[in-house]
Image 1 (cartoon, rainbow, N blue to C red):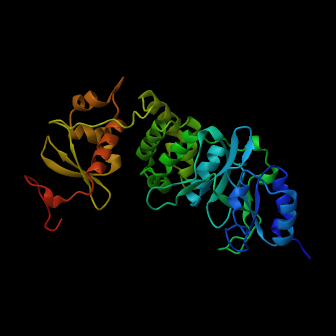
Image 2 (image 1 turned 180 degrees about the vertical axis):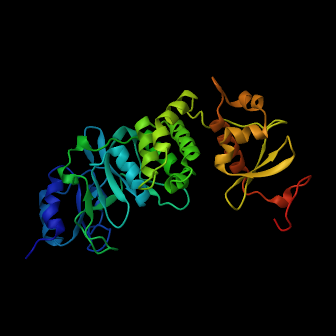
Image 3 (image 1 turned 90 degrees about the vertical axis):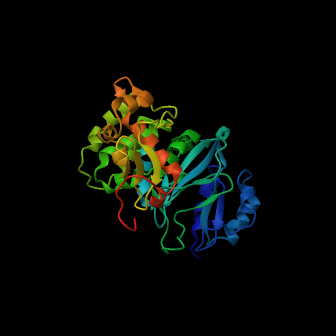
Length: 355
């Protein structure tokens, strides 16, 4: 009788100190009760023999959160959308240990125990899948178990986990998870993914990542990884200069979150409309204007709303002022106001009936 997946693979994971678990055939659930109890306490020799006999034809998974080295635990970053795979491989390396089921990929990493990284879900910008951080109390199915939806085996991307030295797994800490959370929830992701008019989006996205304490290599991996296949624009050539410029303008240490005061001169944030554009009141001309994020981040557009002296007073840099900081503050001001209702506006202006 041929041995099943669990019977042929479990010993390889136990041998390297991982907590192998039998998985119910065609499911993503362990076949045993109280499986989390084996995260820190591996099954005895007798218990392993029992499992190998009883659950021979089951799939295989492992507990996450198990200590794999002094002060380090194994964890996983589970991307539920193909769009995040290339950026993560850019960060972790093309040969990083990962597995794939129906879509996306799960990357195996090590986390310092002192960081106390908990399992959580990082929500993405609308239209894209989330990323799960899997640590203590979670488990994941391993190849070549059969995926319940595809009926096909999970596959390894890069080297299989049981052949990978733990010190070769990427080390992830809370700083990087903060960068990751910032990246996937950014409103600039759709533009970068489209590959159209990417300059302003890439610049603003870079500023967000710098403010989140990303490294240059992480920024490059995320920006370039989000571009579509065959992208032929110039932004990838301009990116190193963008990063240098953003750092020069002092976006580190959350300088990106600069408060905004329109005073009696600057545009007043009013909210956002049903099309996703931002609405401001131009105090100089007494007009209500709808603008895209790219427009609000544009120096030329800002100078059409208020003079240079106004912007420089709040967002000054060595070479004038930061249009990215100014535009981002405007955008955040509009978001904080919520949906814009034109019926609440009183005063001069031209409005279409029914708007």
